[in-house]
Structures are given as structure tokens and as C-alpha cells.
Amino acid sequence: MDKILTDINKNEVLKYLGYKGGKIDEVTDKMISDAMANVLETAVPRYTYKVFDIEKENGILLNGTTFMPQGKDIAELLCSCEKCVMMAATLGIEFETMLRKAQIKDMAQAVILDSCGSSGVENICNNIEKIIEEQWVHKGWFLTDRFSPGYGDMPIEQQRDFCMVLDTAKKCGINVNGGGMLVPSKSVTAIIGLSKTEVTKRKKGCEYCNNFMNCQFRRDGITCD
Ligand code: SF4
Image (cartoon, rainbow, N blue to C red; front, side, top):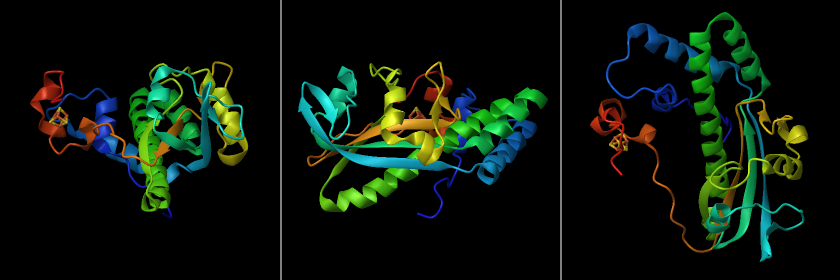
């Protein structure tokens, strides 16, 4: 895969903006389209990932490191896995600079850009996952869903150790600030389990559904699940 940022999912952008259905006015629609194009043009995404064997004695230990993902949820995700991938991805500092400028000049545009950025980094993660799938599925491995520090009961405080293990500062320019947040802000770290037995994956969200724009469930604030 040549490009790692390939698309901004408009439905996802609308979801982040709190859209529940119905017609979008022309001005807003154009602002969204322009922001999507700006992100694709301006962002310089970077990423890294590495595969580790898992040791399971007193918890989960990633072989060759001292990193032990904490919490019941990640333990459950990795219960059938012999290996896992640690990955980190960012939309890059160029997007961050564009967002900061918009926050000073035009808050409405900044809010839309921010949502496009969230969708952009999600697209990068999906594409990394596809690369990993191409490398492992044909050898008989199954991938779990992605799981990030801060999801479920995995402490967000593990973000710093996670980034140190992957050396994200050097490999892709992702740092952790004093508050434990990733910098640039549109960055993601995640673990994907690799299992020799089939794993159940989460259903994809509404933003991937053909009915997104006209869904009565969403208008009523519920989903079809
Ligand atoms: S039909 Fe279900 S998945 Fe599709 S948009 Fe509506 S609630 Fe979401």
C-alpha cells in the first residue's frame, strides 16, 4: 500500500459532529467537503508497528519488553492470542499546525477540521490493519479488534510505556505530554492480537452502513443492534 491515508469517511465526520440525520445545509456541506480535501492534501501521516510474542504467566507480558497491558478487557481480547501487534499512527504535525491556525481564525472550521482529523487517523489505522492482515492471515492467523490504552479498563497511564516500547518519538514523531495525552493530538496507539483460532470481531459502526443518512434508529438516538 503506497499511501497510508486514503480516505476521510464523511459519515464518520458527521457522526463526530453530532449529526443525527436529515438534510445538511449547503454551506456546512461545502465546509465539510473542503475540510476533508484539506486534510488529505496537508497531512503527512506516519506510523510504526511491531509484532511481539505474548507470555502469559502472571498476566500478559510482551516478550523482550517489560510492558504488561493491564486490565480484564485486554486480557480477554488476547486470551486466545500467542502474539500481538503494537501499533502507533499519527496524522502528523502538519495537520496539527493547520488545526491550531483554524482554532484562532475560525472556530466552526476548526471543529469540522478536528472531526475530519479524527476520521483521517482512523483511516490510517484501518489501512495499517489491512497491511498486517495481508502479512498474517495467509499464514493461518486471525486478527482481533484494535484496543488502545484508555479503552475499557486499560489505564490511559500505560500510554507512556506503550510509546517507549515502540519508540514512537523516533519512529513516527508521537510523544506523550505531561497529562498523558498523545502529541500530535490526532494520534492513536493500539494493540491487535494475533490468534491461531478464529476470533469474533466487533460489528462495524453506523458510519459504514448504507442507511447512515436516513436511519430512523439514529434519529431516535438508538441503534439497530
Ligand atoms: S441501520 Fe443500524 S447500523 Fe445502519 S445507520 Fe441505522 S442504526 Fe446504524
